[in-house]
Length: 233
Length: 71
Image (cartoon, rainbow over all chains, first blue to last red; front, top):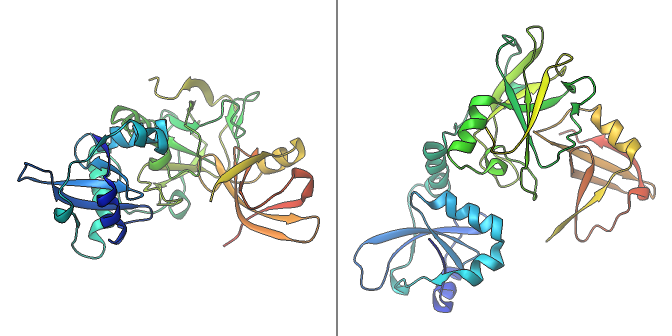
């Protein structure tokens, strides 16, 4: 669930260090409960249960906007004195969310970006998907039906993983967009087309971890074959 | 700090379409302005929309040249 914090808890949180930019991972006890629960708290005032529904709730905050989410949320009945920042090794806190996303959303960790990896030929059968906020994606040549030189896609498998695990594509593909992804462009390169595969590296405050595939020379004519609304498989 | 976007003109869009992306759907560019100033590390989405900070008041006519940002 999503909660707003009481003013006293916000004050306490303000006195505690951030886990990452703009958020804290905390633990504490609710009133009348002995169990310690964990939350991700944004801006010291909006708390989200760090449980199996975390990404769904995080998506709701993105869709509604921070202020609306705050206005609509119930108050978190946490014992102020029990609030602690989740501690561990220096990198543990920042990796907690990452590890959670990796397992739940079938993301990858580490690796290299696509441009860092060797070039290979496609097999002529594999499909790649390019997600975009824009229906008129400028990297697609709609007349010749191809992907322009120097363009990125993801694999069809990774795109399906993104959808079926209800992942956030902006975070998965570390995009700088503040607009939602609305479109998916399907590309099936020909055997002579060359690509480089890699893992999306963290950027713009996003985790990355999706597959990325770079086509330095673009793809052949008639390799772009369909545009669908994002999420429609 | 908020962000806003300005639409690039057709010539700039076509020019950027010929240059490689840094990630799916975006390019990181440096802007050389007509007054001689240089704005570095700016994001262009879909070769079309330049993302700027609220404090950077800029019109597309102010841009003399766009180059891909080099590390």
